Amino acid sequence: MVNQETVQDALRVVIDPDLRRDIVSLGFVQNLKVHANRVAFTLKLTTPACPVKDELRKQAEDAVRAIPGVEAVEVDLTAEVRPNPGAIGRAMLPGVKNIIPVASGKGGVGKSTVSANLAVALRQAGADVGLLDADVYGPSIPMIMGATERPMPSGGKIQPVVSHGVPVISSGFFVQPGQAVVWRGPMLAKMVEQLLAGVNWGELDYLVIDLPPGTGDVQLTLCQRIPLTGAVIVTTPQPVAVNIAEKAVAMFNQLKTPVLGVIENMSYWESTKTGEREFIFGAGGADHISQKWDFPVLGKVPLATTVRETSDGGRPIVLDEPESPAAVAFTECAQNLAAQVSIHNLKSEADDLVKITF
Image 1 (cartoon, rainbow, N blue to C red):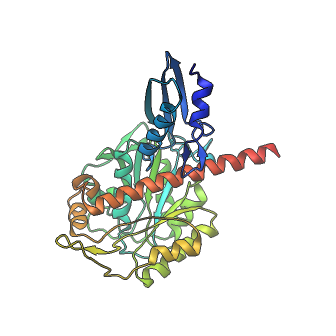
Image 2: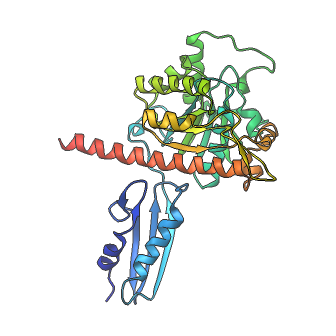
Image 3: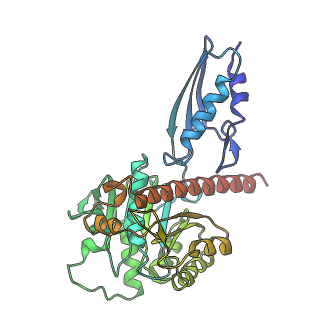
């Protein structure tokens, strides 16, 4: 006879390739029911953006079907994002599970475009995502996201503007068009705190923060004020961008903020007619950073006119041209980022358990 113990034993052969443990010990298998040689269960993953969710589901189905006597298998796939353990009990942003700053050493590498597409791609996967534009000197997220409304006060806090299903707040909403921001450090710190604590972010799986270039007051305030799940570094391939991106990595290390991975933007240009690739800005920049600092390359996004056009038009390319090479690359970056968040949080949970035990 088929029973729950037999099914669980069969499912232990299914290993999550990112978390490197079987789906039973990870607690993914829930609501297991066995009736008349028919098996049904829920496969509850750690993120709806899991890059291998379809593979895990198929492996789980195949493993159960291989049990002698099983006549039918029904797998319900769902997900619940785990919070950064450091965020539990946090006074500021208590409903936000993971805060992910997107940084670069220098301007002009497409960091804001990457931030917007990451947020929208995670939202498309089914996650609750917010997007904070903390690039005080050059806020471009409202244009990229097509956010034309003004945020309104609500219950003593500011209500974000929702664009493409993503709550958005930017310093650009509060500065007159054409006005230059000429602020010293304390004013920048105050603005960052206001954009964090003074906004009704609600319940979010991920809050993506578009940082200004460099290693200045905004980055310092953010790292010191709230526990961050981990940062994403954006670079282009050429050495001048890579060298300065590494300064951002060094800053996060100094401030004890994990780096989840690096994204190489404008990685190459690909001919739509021949498929031939030209490496306009060189090659290997993200790979160099990854190998030197020991964190993964989350993806490489091609240089494409459509990325610029869709950003200028207020509809990130993952929405406007989801089948394009750039959109596919951004989606893979988002999936790999979500996987790294899950890995980080699971490891942090295990570390906290060890500390409590000993």
